[in-house]
Image (cartoon, rainbow, N blue to C red; front, side, top):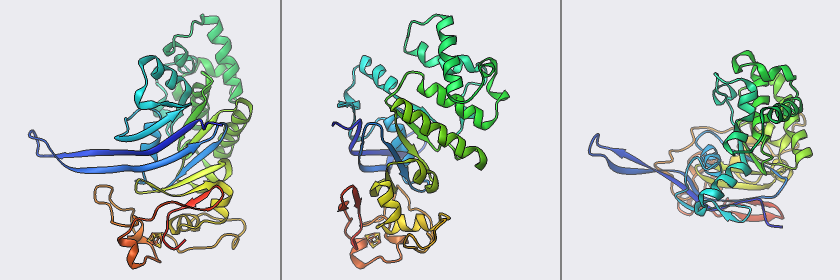
Length: 322
Ligand code: SF4
C-alpha cells in the first residue's frame, strides 16, 4: 500500500546574511540535508536526535510552516510543493500538530470551546453553535476532561490539561497524521505517561498516524513503531523501533541509548556517553558528520560520507564500520 507520507531527499538550507543594510548572503545553514523517510498508515514514527539535529525543521516542513529548499514531501501521493490553494486547505486538514508548549500554542483570550472548535471554522465546516457544542463536548470527554472545561480559559488549566486541549483541537478534523513536537517534555513526569497513554488510545481508536519528535528516547521507545535517528541534518539510523533499540548499530545511536536508564542493564550493548557538542550546521564536518565525536573514527571517516545501508529487513544505518 502507498505510504501516507514520504520525504524524498528533502533539504532545508537557510541563507545566513551579513553586512547590515547591504545584506549579502555569506553562508548556508544546512538544517536538513537530504532526508528520506516513509511513514505507513496507522504507524507511529519517532524522530530522535539532539537539539540541532534537524528534527524540528523536519516537523515544520511536514506542517507546511516552511518550504523545503529541494526534494519532495508527498502526502497521500500529492507533492506538497505543487498543491493548489484548495489542495493546501485539504493538506492542512489532513495534517495537524501538537507542540511542546501548550501554554503558548493556546490563545489565552479564547475559551477552550473556541480553541477546540477553531479548526472547524477555518475549514468552513457549516456547523451551528449547538452542533459545535455537541462535538466539542464529545471531544473534551474523549481527552479525559469534563464538559465544564469548555467554558474555561487556558490560564485556569494545568499543563497536562492544556496538552489535552491541544490534542482535542488537533483531532477535531479527523486528520490522517498528527505531528507531535516534544509533546510531553514540558510536563511533570507523573503526567507524561497519562498523555502518552491518551495518545495511544486515540491512535488505536481513530487510526491516526503520528510523527513524534522527542529528545527523550524512553518516550520514543514506548510509543513508536518506527524510528529515525538524526544527526546534523541527516538520518544516521532508521528502522523498526524494537530493532533499533535492541540492536543499535550506529555509534551515535549507541551513545544516545547509553544515556537512557534501563530496567535490564546489559540487554543492549553499552557505549561511552556522548562527549562534546553537536557540530555546526553552517560548517559541517567532512565525511561522516559524527566523526569529530566518534570514539571509533577511522581515517576514511573524515573523508567519505557513509550512506544508509540495510543491515536487516526494516533496519538501516550509515556507518563505515557496519
Ligand atoms: Fe564513527 Fe566512522 Fe561510523 Fe561515522 S562512519 S559513526 S565516524 S565509525
